Length: 217
Image (cartoon, rainbow, N blue to C red; front, top):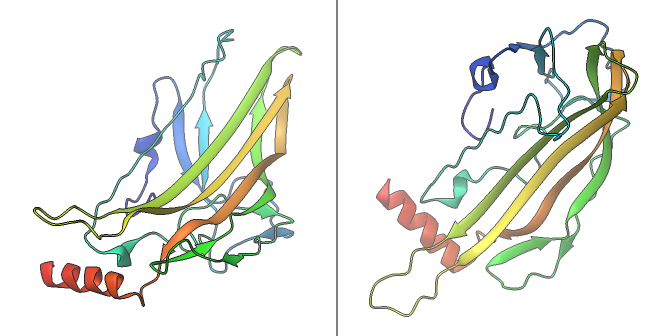
């Protein structure tokens, strides 16, 4: 999923590459991995007969997918506070412990605020190719989800609305090697959540916004 949008292999299709989505690639061992209960990791399988050397380091295969969803109600915000099991994340995660979320004093009573929670992570990718001993190969992936609230300014009034608050989560890894590879490799990355401010739904202003959204539905 990307927000509310289900993904399939057509979104990843590129000329000269064969694309598939698989859940049980050969030789995968997740006995020591962190898995969201009830989940099974999806893997993007990218195959091609040949990749030509590229001195400019422009990626030979690259995909960027973006989704933006607008809503009148903050009740549909994606869960950047607890992304694991609620939104798209990179799985499996090896030797992983979700970082501690530390609530801090908010800049306004309209918000609940947290210190950024980040931690190093390791995942595994199946990398199988032949090359010259000097060929440098890099594989990387980055997920970013964020919420932002921008309340419209009402005509002929002095705006007292909630504006510009936002929060996000990030999940990423990168693998770089020289020479060929034939098997599972550990890829290092970063996981972060609970970054910035969240609505304090008990505040009268947020109650007013949610009520107005329900009436406009």
